[in-house]
Length: 129
Ligand code: MN
Image (cartoon, rainbow, N blue to C red; front, side, top):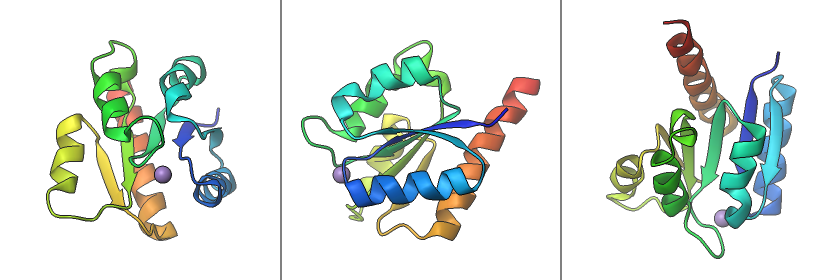
């Protein structure tokens, strides 16, 4: 069965790009444009990975990651954060919030897929232990 990936990204072009690339690689993808709906979407879709834009209207992706990592179920889902801020200290803040992976925009497909595969496969290994 295909691994599931929830894509939380408010920018229409980026969301479509991420979803198209992931689908072309055989993943089942659930897009989420509204950060306020992201955690509910994660509970319903039960993804193997969440791709999380940090700059969202109404709520910060950082806050969503912190909330997810305090939730007994959601905390088990790895998070790949994607952010337009490439400032010093950003990666540390994002990893402190609990994200397992981090990419700065603009995102290239190669590093994006490498990060996705690394995190999805890590989950598979953990589950066989
Ligand atoms: Mn955004």
